[in-house]
Image (cartoon, rainbow, N blue to C red; front, side, top):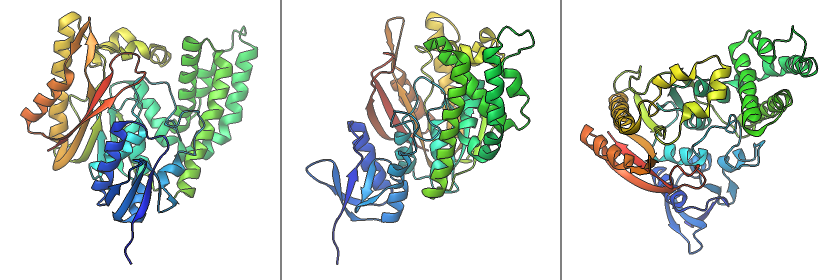
Amino acid sequence: MNYKKTIELMDRVQFIYELALAKLELESLSAKFEITNSMRKFELVSGDEELLRKRVAYFKSIDGQITDYEKLFQFNQTTSINQYLTHWMYPYKGKFHPQMIRALLNFIKVNEGDLVLDPFMGSGTAILESQILGLNSVGIDVSPVCVLVSKVKTESVAVLDKIKEIKDEILKQNETNLTNFENPENKGIRASVEGIKDEKVRNFFLVAELISHSDESRRGRDFHKSFSNNVEKMLKSVEDFDKAIKEVGLKPGKVRIEKGDSRDIKLKDNSIDGIITSPPYSIALDYVKNDAHALEALGFDTKIIREEFIGVRGTNSNRIVLYNQDIMKSIDEMFRVLKPGKFCVIIIGDASYLGERIKTVDFTLQYAKKLGFKLIKNIDKIIYGLYNVMQKENILIFQK
């Protein structure tokens, strides 16, 4: 007997673009459905219910059974619904919503064993979401801070036991630094962290230190107390990741993270199954200045490293010229490494610089089409609270 089954949207779905992505991911997963008058529930006419429960991003239940993603949202040490598992680690401006990334991964039809690329990795949201979904991924970023943070988000679960073994000793040394700050022999927590032999374990505590530098410089919090709190919170999040793998039945994909240049991607032609990325809004948002405390803590000269970043070189109109040239080279590289017939998602918005609107969306559309990309979808995404840099982004979905 054939009958329709209810698919219910998550309570947190509230924007038009989210509803649009919810419909697109269902269609891409070969589901046929009807939307009810309430707009909160869909009626599933046909489709692989098990596949849908494992993959969908915007639905909390299918025929009364909770989806995997709704379960994953419960593994959260923060008050923000989008910062579950290790997503919250490090305060990076302009982060992706993980939920949006998962829906886009579904829409571009990447499957287990496929390779996803984000050449502007940032804090690693797309790479972590790919890993959670069981997809292999490559993340590239010019920022050593982004590379470090993204590694910790995705690699720490593999060394959880080692982190737990050494945690108490590191916190004890941090407490000693806190009480004996006038001791000339005290070299700070960095000396303790640098003494850790395992790179993945060392990186975990190094990111806890970087977050603490941020807490101190931006919020006036005590560094050592913040370090202890961050270590404990980060550890709980990694433990959550481990529990999610076991309880939800995740099969994490392989992750490769590298410091690199989006204008010169070290990958073979036609080697990537899908791209999801967002070029930096560095014309209006200075990422070097924003992460200066972390870059300096890692020993980098921010004046020198600026020359490697897209969008922060040059002044006045020359800055925009250089930015556009860099974006073109980056799109060239994305087109080169993507397999024919596969999809590239570029999330970008028009920023303001020196009081003028920079038409980055139109520029990207025109250049990508000229290069040979076919525009499949252009979805408006309203932005709230992105530091007034812009009010809207566009989700541009191209096919090679």
